[in-house]
Image 1 (tube, rainbow, N blue to C red):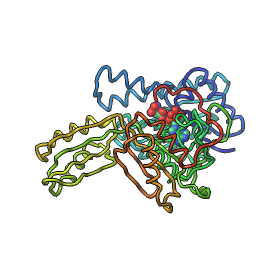
Image 2: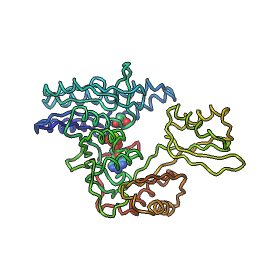
Image 3: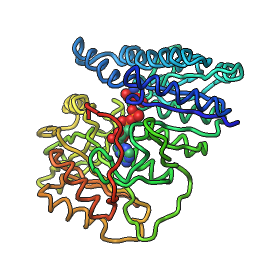
Image 4: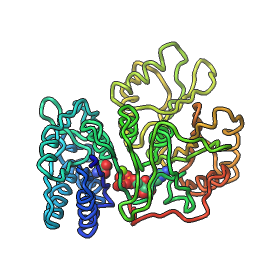
Length: 417
Ligand code: ADP
Ligand code: ASP
Ligand code: MG
């Protein structure tokens, strides 16, 4: 008898029929003799719709109230799933994140988990229940409701598995597992049977939506046995683990993209000590993460520099920079949207020169300019115009020998992407 966490994402519980399918699947697991905890996301596009609704009333809604609103999506799912399981004659009980003991930092919209006290969950399990926990939510010490950031239900699942000593954490989604790239963009993306925590963390941080980055971090630190698989079939999924066999000659193992990118340029900035510290210090104070930074050469004591932030932070970042204009003379600040960051990832890159050069060449053959570049030991990222994203990712996938012979399984639409 093993202890399982089974997590189902939004598209897996998108309507009544899918909710019933999930109910049958978790009851089956219990009938096989296992103890089962379930984490669910909001149904279908509910979270996006709640955000749209909020923005109709207020383009800059207070973050606290956004968390109050967004957590309702998951609360609908947990209650409905408990009812569907009850209808099958099994025992189930649903808990919000805070009822399940998730304590977090006081950081609305992107809170980290500080502590989990799963006593109530464990007691309900002992009583023979299938225990259902609402994804991506917790509560601060002061009793304020928080969320973990978009896609954060994966983190709820992994953290719950770690806190309860679960034997398995299974992430059920709308594709068969983790692929060499997004199978919605590249039809013959290759399904991986296993991937290391480090490579998956890199891919997730670079935009691969299939797992929330913090979920991978949590799994790595707590050695959680993590599997990503489909809720639409019984195919074997992808195992995320410490060590994986390195295939001979594989240099790039995955390609990720991130559409949540904007570039900000600060033009004609006086080239004096402390300028960068002031700019990035002010952005950090406003809790804006900066990614790639590029500074141009200095002419007449002035320099230009550009950096990227999340698209969702772009307006806020421009306001911050306008706010420090008096202390930091510069000529102009501009921003550019409609960009994407495309990244190649692979542990094998370390020992292979010329990987970045090949990437630049493939992108240029698509007639696309590279706006910014950043590299590390196991990745190269290029910021490009978003209009040719699919072509670029597909061409890179072929160039690095990643194409599979068969077409990937994709279960159901993803209208918002
Ligand atoms: P869920 O609602 O189940 O959490 P997500 O949309 O968050 O689902 O994550 C699954 C999606 O991740 C897939 O539909 C796919 O489009 C996308 N994706 C991006 N990169 C990858 C990848 N490398 N492997 C598999 N899926 C990926
Ligand atoms: N419902 C939340 C979102 O759409 C959390 C999740 O699905 O993981 O981001
Ligand atoms: Mg997700």
